Structures are given as structure tokens and as C-alpha cells.
Image (cartoon, rainbow, N blue to C red; front, top):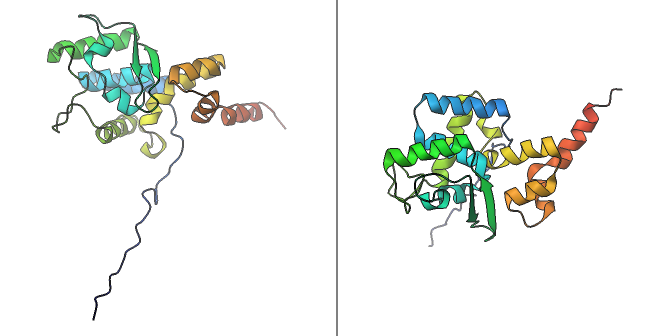
Length: 207
């Protein structure tokens, strides 16, 4: 006699979860999170939030940044360039004044060398934060200002600035370059601009 093996069907990872495009933050929401991080005196998370918004990088690329990628000597530069892991394409980004200051404070506090990762983990033995840890931190930022974390995520941080730029300028090509997309169609899908534009047009028509 042979024992029967019962195979239990594996449930899909997204069962009972809302999935899809993650919403970008508004300017008001950006400042609400930034102020909370400043009050909490959390230099690492403040610098990570600010640079995440400015750089528009995927989480894996953001977490892989080293001091040398943003600073030459002591001062943090106003622009930087990295090679994206997913596409192996270079992408440039600006580093605004608030972000430069938060990065300089982080580097000085921990006396980082040029070869150190910017965003080190405090609980694991890895060289830098993992994408899972980053996701949990982003959820904390979102819930701290009363938003639903199922509607936001790490791609919220990446999408926020390009979405604001598009709303102000309608310049898709600029958004494509900033996100490092090879095709304009990818930028259209990523930002969901066709849907947003259609809704905006519809909202302006009174019947």
C-alpha cells in the first residue's frame, strides 16, 4: 500500500489584496511626511525619503546608492547619474537643496566613507536595507499621515515627482528621461496619464 499525497493548492500572493498602480503623493502629503521625519529626528529615513522623491529611482537602485554616487569629497552634488539594475541604462537625477542637506547630515553623523552605502540596515547583516525593509518603511510613512497603505507603496515614491511634473508641464518626454524608460509608451502606462487626462477632461464638462 502506498500513502496518498495530498497537494494543497497554493493561494495567490495577492488574494484579498488591492493591487495595481500605486498613487503618487501630493505636495501637501510630501511635506506632511517630511515634517514628521524631521520631528522624529531620523536622519536616515529623512534622507531616504527626500532622495527617493528627487531621484525617481526604483527601490533596488535607491538602496544600492553609495556615498560616492552623490558626493565628491564633502559636499553632496546637485546632480548624479547611476546605471539602473533592471535596464542597465544610465539615468540622471537632480538633488535639491533640502535633499542635499539631509544627505550631508546623514553622512556626517555616521562618518561614512565614499564606499559606504547610504542606507544601511539597523537590524540585518546585509550591507544595506533590503527592498522588503524599504517597503515596510514606506508603509510607515504612508500610515503616519493617515493614508491607506494598500493604495500606496515604494513605486509611490518613484512616481511622485514625475506625476507632479507631468501635471504642470504635460511634457511626457521629460518624464520619460527622468524615469529612465526606453519607450514613451512605458512612461504613459507607468504614470497612467491617459486615464488621468481623460478624467480631467470629463470633469470639466458639465451636463
